[in-house]
Image (cartoon, rainbow, N blue to C red; front, side, top):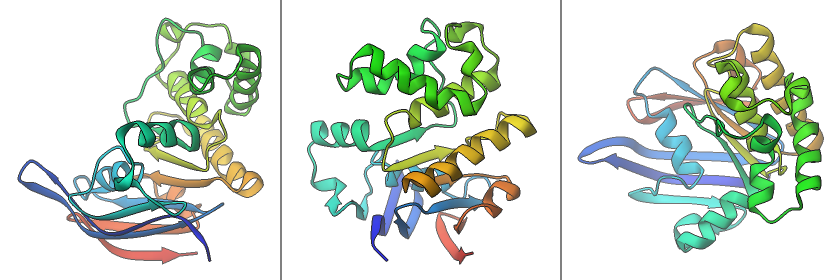
Length: 224
């Protein structure tokens, strides 16, 4: 199986505290992987290293044959902007922009025309239950609605890999299901690879592969 994303022997430190110990990870196109474990296990640290947000102290992360540490800051930023999507655990839409403007932002930053970017945003927002709120400002939305806008923003440019840190954590049952089903649909229909950090066993159970973490290390890998 060809892997679009892999990590080998990744260590990471916050100051003098080691957060990751020799993490190995593999992800194929169209695969959904869940990273699980208790609080402080290193889940988010691994996700951020895989996404190129945090540089490993040791080891390598490779995306589509490119070792991320070999890229300049500008090239890494361009790769993340054009080919990766990211939903952070605390990421919020810009309050002064509308729902549609927020979701379209990655495409607009990439130089895509406004009409095309807004049309793409509308298509992504609709299955997330936000199609009726395109012109509302994010400042007037609930926390759960803002979360769904953040998910749409990560998906709008059809990235090769989507990284999501607790994407359903702030959502109720129906909205959480809608977000998860959209990730699964993209994996199935567009070969988008998805990496989810989650505490929710129901979300983890829908993944193709689960990486279980404890004390900064991957304790086991479970493939469905």
